[in-house]
Length: 297
Image 1 (spheres, one colour):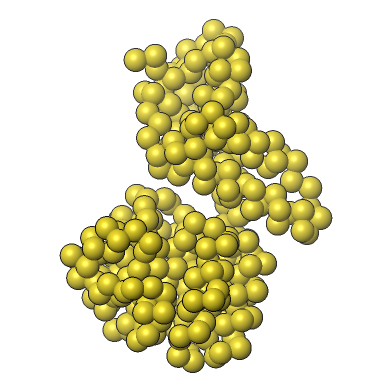
Image 2 (tube, rainbow, N blue to C red; image 1 turned 180 degrees about the vertical axis):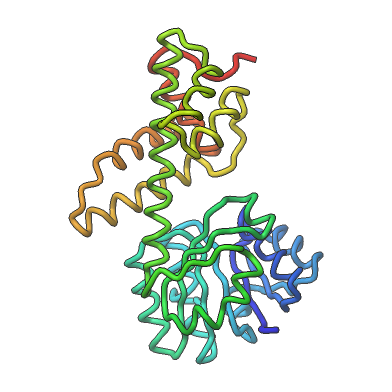
């Protein structure tokens, strides 16, 4: 079993690391929050004092971090992995970051004989806990093939998309569709309820009609019950739509609908809902329209 390092033990990283331990991989872990490290040590991992310590002895290093700046710092920054890894080490970044940053990091790692796969994930915390993540991978095909055993310890659906950065492109396409769909669902439901329709009836109608969607089936029942506890947060939805908008701008692709959805999540953040599930964007529309879809209980 290859020795694996794991950096970033938050809501997603923690269960992903645990699944690697369950699969029998020797695991070294690091996070800025000491309690997160200790929780994994209690499950059988070895604690590291920083990225350099993770790099020593790891054959594969997985990063699961908030955004592009953090990934860049951990991998190729002043105290980053690049200065301590042995040639042949594979870094698998499973964060969601800019495709251009992936390509930049991959080029720097290649100079010291190391490889990078970008492998962002979908299906959220539940998928991370159950080991059923959907994983979208960019980078060298042979490296992807060689690392499938590691990836399958965390996910059930692996997709090789293409060269460096293409995993991130696939993730941005997926999350743009998903997060815009949540906004459209919320907007339409607020319109329907303000018109006098029963939201439960609307749910039954649309789930049997052409407007049916994952956003409707997954998000609306929680909204109707007034449950907004975090899953995929408003902050993350804003971040991913912002990444998609900037990537589209770089490519000169108009992203008008994406930009509008991003700003609605921005309003939700400004109103203090950033830590709530992305479905909380409906609260912005409810307040604006003076109509409430969710339960008043």
